[in-house]
Amino acid sequence: MTGYRFGGSEVGGVSILVADDHAVVRRGLRALLETQPTWKVVGEASNGRDAIEKAEKLRPDVAIIDIAMPELNGLDAATHILKATPHTRILILTMHADEELIHKTVLTGASGYLLKSDAERDLITAVEALLHKKTFFTTAASDVILDHVRWTDQNRTMQPQAGRLSLREREVVQLLSEGKSNKEVAARLNISTRTVETHRAKVMDRLNLHSFSELIRYAIRNKIVEL
Figure 1 (cartoon, rainbow, N blue to C red):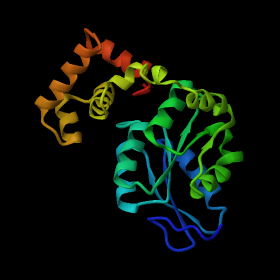
Figure 2: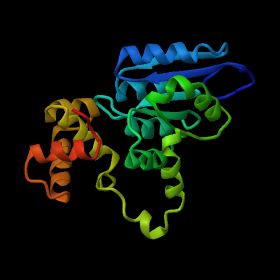
Figure 3: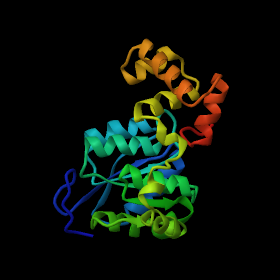
């Protein structure tokens, strides 16, 4: 393909970032993508925070991001990337045709949602759609997207429970649920330990959680983390 011109690529070329915590998946995606003569995988990331750093540095035309990644999940990483590099088009990659995940993908501003089981068949088509400033949603998501479009204002006020947390609060919850200490979370997010403790206390109070194990169950149930 030729003729694309986005923020991070050279004229006629397409730059792509691939983020997945499994090296074999990244290799497979790279092999598929680079069958297109002008497409280049310019970077790979194995977790959500690495994806953000690579995106800010490389400013790719397209970022292909797995949802279930350590340190920061793909949806929250996508939110950060779109703030830092608004021109980057994001394709969410996942194993699950889950209604809540599809809704959250739409709300992040990502342009596509592709099942890993469909990647061999649809990956090129999906990326091409994004490059033409269109959206791409895997076939299994079509009915969910239609339902989303038909939401009334009343329905839109009934967000999933995870939507009650801010992005920073979800970051803190994910890192704590992955077993990091308050001090480690503070260092990772460049905030004070006291701020981490405050976020944790506010989240638990708001969600009426009474123990750390309940917080972990909440994070798993709302797909903030997968353990």
